Length: 220
Image 1: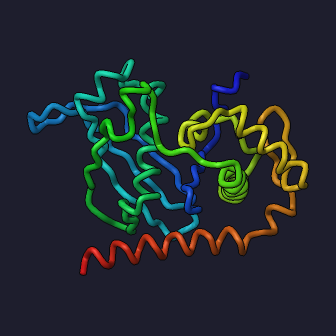
Image 2: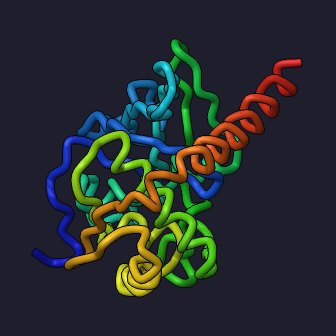
């Protein structure tokens, strides 16, 4: 199996930089806006995992400008940048999670794409931050889904502007610390990682509190 091909899993957990575990349900295909406006729409459900049903309902609105640089509107060309654009919105505290709510439009535009560099840009992470994200990824995927955790996901590399090879290199160092075993980019969590439940729970609680406080302030 190549590093760019993700194996089938019941659910993939994507962790924000602040420590929130998310899962995404993208309701393919894109549909052209019925309002006559020149954009395409993809409905998406973002679930905040490890909560009692908190989620965000989002209508991803793909601009005509960005559509021109995409090879197609198929999942193989759009899924990774959409997931990362939504994850970036959560990191920027622009997304509110509730138990029930209305569909919220989200512009999927060139703000996440560099025409000069001809690449997606979501922000670079240093090695220390990448290590923290790997630990969170392995912990939450193991706890919420189970099984081995694939660390060769190009979606993850795209989000932090690095390569899957570099992620694997950092993961190998964490494996040497006894946090998990690593074989062919699959991580198997070990007790020293899973026993850090309080740490990961507190990181998540702090991030969620900041998110809630921001939206409560905006509501007045």
